[in-house]
Image (cartoon, rainbow, N blue to C red; front, side):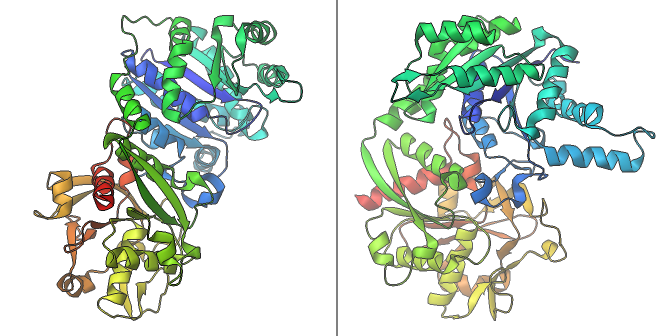
Length: 536
């Protein structure tokens, strides 16, 4: 077995402390110190993957090149590390149990009684080590979802305990992220919740090697000494994680605290390189010192939860920083849009994104929004369902096909300009059955898309069941809505543009999944730049 080191990130006291950001920031520092690093997420819910979860439940579903529907934290991993993740980077309890039950049905256990220990924990350990056994990575960081003490997380914590025994303490390390709350009435930071969280973890047989303490105020040497004494952790391994201005500040804050130094020392890893974050900090400088501001509307139907469109929001921020622009994003609920208020809500915007989604709720508001920006020359980017809404809007209001629709919304429409994909017609199960992952797209030379990408063949990630109906391709193109990107094998329309509009692009794929801090997506770069020009 390759001599890969394993770091486990657990959470205590409260959920939503930012384990994913801490894991990604640590990985960034280790990567910048010359090590090859990847991160995986273990999710304790029984869904096989997040693909069937409503965004209100769990935020966006992130999609990898190889077609895995995963937790949104994988988006953070990719955006921070600038390397793609895969099926192996996200594991759920549902997938673990499904695998073990399938083995039991095949008779793989030879009549043994199948139990959580050893069968479930063995499968968890196998999944954790898949990435390490490839030989590609010096370090694998595993983020364990949930909070220590949750019933759902117990098999994962037990697996960590066993792996520390199997692989040796010199090859494993546990980072425990916890909360140091501030009581305003007492004007005190309190360590007791962290002490109890560590005690809970130790009762499961796992002692944290490093404590990362989320706090609103600096914790000071006295609190570090107290935590070290009562949590059996070296004082140098008590790391302050004070609230940051942006998530992009966290790698620098963790470097200042010496998190990577403690990790390398405890794992017995030596390097002559110090973390070099030059390109990262150039991005950060641009992000914090914009020369101009643009106002971008985001029309969607899950806007109450910011995480539902996490990748889109960050892709806009990446593009804004690289254009030295501050992008002020205005979430607009598509159900609230109608013909009477659309001008009031959209007239001050410099660009509009119509977001992805499923189902018929709120689609009329999206169509009304598309019509407004088309007729008023405002830059438009439609993503997946947003692109489909642009096609429906054009068919209704330019071709005057009044009943034009998608068969997803209206099975009996007389003008199905968007229709279910041929290979989806016999699909009955919902989970993992859409057109998923990276697919090639051929761009038409002379198009805006070709100008943006600067090449003829591109690869982008998809997540959809419905597509542009090519039966309507000619009449739509004749009317001015041009198809400028096609799947080279199937002829599926991937991109539509309007030639006599300043900037109007709809894409069937999800460009936001490939935008990273150091490599913002060219489509978002061009869109944000067009918004700035529209403002000018």
